[in-house]
Length: 416
Image (cartoon, helix red, strand yellow):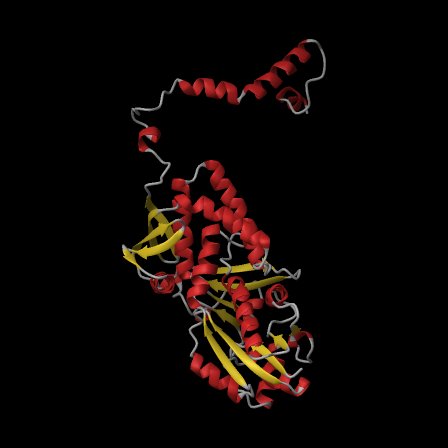
């Protein structure tokens, strides 16, 4: 190998990989930084990469694309892994993988490398992206090759090679950040009996320290895509940044969970997704207003499947594209405004309106409606319960003749 493109973050793992690659393979290293809104000083990250021995460091701004084409697509699909995780890290990996491949091609690299560990999901996500986009490129995963076996070992390696890192033995959390969320793993969080300490949080205030007065925010959607906040239209990056600040100030979007990793083990972490949590609650409220029951059930099934695909790193697949097509078709009616109340860690959709609403007060009112005849319900119920009544009559006839009631009928169940 002559040259390797490394997915570089400037954190502990990728910082020690640069000198390790040079020592192990005698190759040049091109550091590739995908700017997905991680709030880092990327000029400092570039300087750090070069100081660590990289031959070049490319910083590629993909914030707009990340929010518009990845985060907002998962939002529209209702993707929520294991009913809690809004997939912030999972959504960014396929985009970072694509950027890595593009820069590897531009620099004539023979291989790509990443800093994901052999225990985590990210190794699969990165390598699935490379397999889908550039199967000819060799993939180097140092955590599966080197003698470093812990973050403490990585810290020792960094110290021995004069590489400055922010992690310390006292604060050794593994973090991943972008515009959609930030995750925290490792350290004392690995003990599921430990309560996450308030100082872990970076995007949200602890809910008990949030304002004592609630705040309402209005989100406007067009075909399932958020386009305005409180009547002011914004682009995807500005809209999400604005909501992150407002919701984070109320402690909204903090999730502590033990999840099932793709590689077969459980992991425990803390996620902060303030703006995404508000948008998720708002869009689900708009769905309940505009979708019929079967459409709502279908979207729920698609959302679960979508979340699993994203979590497993299968973004560049026909299945994901097919689900997106179905979600886009359903979302044609997701137009309107939703008011969400923010208060001490909660985001509650409290009101919604839409020109595409199927909710009709004239039909639903407890008062005198103009289009609903209560007498019609009798015939509907007789038809709806026809199979129940037919089965019960058969049981009665058999009992009267001294025979056995059909399996599962009330008569037979009562005998047990």
